[in-house]
Image: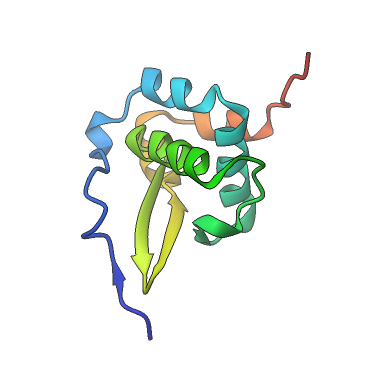
Length: 110
């Protein structure tokens, strides 16, 4: 069984530090909204390399970091795989209904 640890990723904000401003700023980007939607639809944690996003690896890393710093996702290692989980309960406790509203809102293409 692979070892699970979050000791290598130490910059997750406490739930008390999650703000509406930070969440909205993180979710303004369509790639980040796509990551959040994929996590919500999967119903399980997902490895970084398996998301369907059309950006380079370094750009993807940036997007995951923004989501992590906003308190939207939590990352941890399972063996050598960086896993992602949606912090749904934390977000619901500080911003009730916001995540669900964002998940059902259509993306507008101009």
